[in-house]
Amino acid sequence: MPTLLFINACVRGRDSRTLALAEQLLERIREANSHDMAFHIEEIRLSTENMLPLNYERLQRRDELLAAGQTDDTMFDYANAVASADMLVIAAPYWNMAFPASLKIFLELTSVEGITFTYAQDGTPIGLANASDMYYVTTSGGYIGDCNFGFEYVNALCRLYGVENTHFVSAEGLDLDGADVQAIMEAACSGEIVNF
Ligand SMILES: Cc1cc2nc3c(=O)[nH]c(=O)nc-3n(C[C@H](O)[C@H](O)[C@H](O)COP(=O)(O)O)c2cc1C
Image (cartoon, rainbow, N blue to C red):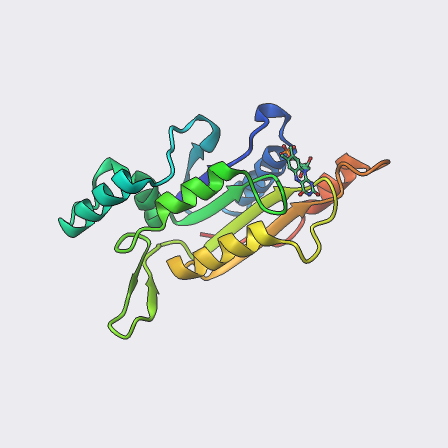
């Protein structure tokens, strides 16, 4: 059964509007695929994961494991989950022109040569991820405009991983005076949905 990996980088629990928007999107993906093969949604909720950024010790351990070909070590669980998923959905509020730090740590742990990407002999990157589509879902207080650094960064990593199609879903201006939050949220998730 195909797997949709839902990477939930929302911080404010059930109060999160980004989570609400992501749930709308997941529902639309479910509907769009309901006549085809069943699929499974696996969620990684970053706010409850015990993730640490790489330090010198962990970096050395990682290098040793990779040199020994032990890519099934638990240190690589996130990288293996991203590499094997059939579709990726990432939900992250727009924070400080990008996203919460937990997502950066997660992406540091998923960017592993030999699992999510590798290099050809001439140095050209080769993506190893299975998924061909990634949805990036965000909400923002103001307008993101040309400061879409969170999505742009994730987009670049997805290209490295070989995920060819990336989709940006946003509800913006939610904290501005007089914003009709419900209407903005409803309009945000009306684009075309891809199938597995
Ligand atoms: C720590 C923090 C940083 C934020 N940075 C920005 C920002 O740079 N630009 C912006 O427009 N809104 C910013 N906001 C507002 C959020 O993007 C907005 O309230 C969003 O809808 C929050 O998503 P949530 O409901 O999923 O938590 C920030 C909010 C917080 C708490």
